Length: 315
Image (cartoon, rainbow, N blue to C red; front, side):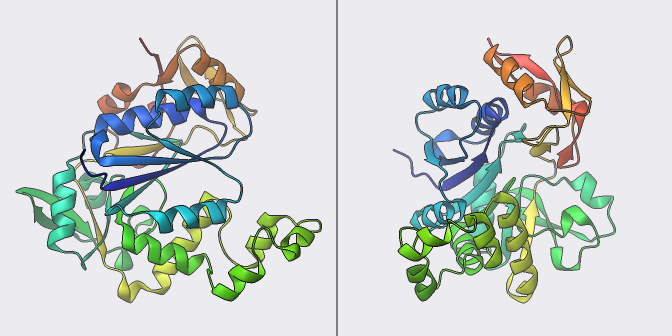
């Protein structure tokens, strides 16, 4: 059995269609034999569809979220893989990714690389005022940008939970730093302790974790990870990316969606209101995100809108 060198950690809630599309696109873009996927699943709506999805991907480890903070910290600290790739259920990968290039680049410059971004393109980077440097890896050319000096929003974001491959040891360092995993704090605030059981009666765990200035969901994880990198920028190197973008986030809806489906065209059109129920109905009919449609449009930005969202019925 080949070693699973990448731990892929994905966060999902109320989006079984998008979650299925993410997994389908992931294994089209990266060799499945090298990836162990962990799904941190916030159970709410559409659990039946999620269970059917999990049955289709039995090799994925599903973690039913009880306390996002502790669930993630425990998972991160248990990993033995070389790399970590975070993901969210609104991300789609649409191009092949050469893992040999990524691995060789990390191996040849272990202290000079923050991560390998799949969400940037050379075309976008060159349109910015920032300097882009060429780097040779595995006989190919990749690109490097100094996020600490960047004047462009998408280029100066060192830590994110969408589509960047990091060294596991760096992720552990960042997560444990922002998780405030001090021995005394861990002992005092053990989830099963009388103190915490009493505290839960008067304050939500989310508010409690927020008061400690630590993370309690993917958004706060990303925010605090970004802040930690900025505060320690002298110790954090640059990151790399391929010539072409390999992954995008489809900004179609949140769990409180703001758009609806055009059933006839199997696409999205703007409207105030919720569409997560409509998306789930389409999923039950066998529709997923049309990955080929995204590839044909050749996006250069990581955040994409309605134009890139099209559904396709699976055979």
